[in-house]
Image: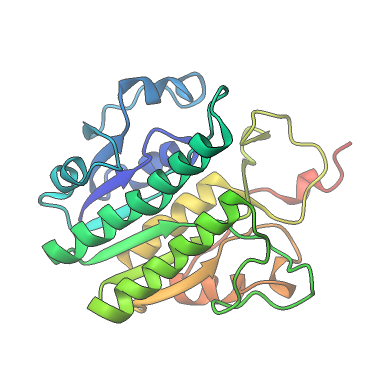
Amino acid sequence: MKVAIFGAAGWLGRAFLANAAGRHELRACDIGPEAWDAWQDIDGEWNAGEKVYGDITNSEAVAQALEGVDGILHMILYRTPPGLSPDEAIDKSILIYLKGLWNVLEGAQQRGIRRVVHVGSCQTKHRDGTFFSSEVRRHDAGLYAVCKRLQEEMCRQFYEAYGLSTIVLRPDYIVDTRIGVGRQREELKGMGMGWVCRHDLAEACRLALESEKVEHDVLHVVGTPGADEHCNVGRTREVLGLEFKGDYEKYTQAK
């Protein structure tokens, strides 16, 4: 399969590129060459496929990135830079998260692309104790939370309206249990409820791209013990055949 990966140079993107190496033809898409600097000290250089640069909010740039691909992995993360006014921060987030995903989904359905996997975000445990099935939405209402919830709805709508196969993965906090580091580069000490090792999540992304068992679903991907009590990670195992291989247990005793 030829796969376009949006956000390829990021924390999760680099894990996916390593996971999919030798399995699929990869087109790594990101904003510019400087994006690769963020994790180069940990993940090193990547030269195992095609690199494409462009702004995801530009429909022409996205269309070019999608030419000739069979599957799409969308995992864009936007962090508001310092100095933006509140209005500028809102506008930029909405553009990147919503217009950006619109460009990806619209481009996919126009080209008959087989599968779009979108990496969303959700809590592991609902504040009201409600079990997080695919139909239960996240409960918070900050800018990031609302954008991520709306992204889920966009994926649902493109599936229902056009039959575009979309799988939404819901991680909580993404860490690396191999090297003991979190997304913020902090040392892992004492396991949180909602951790997922980025390498397990990368495996889930690849399996979702490859799956013939499901056309649309919204699946939690959380590796820490006890997550099955609160969210549909059991269905993720069942549908995708995912095995969590991160060593989460060793952090339960960390001080």
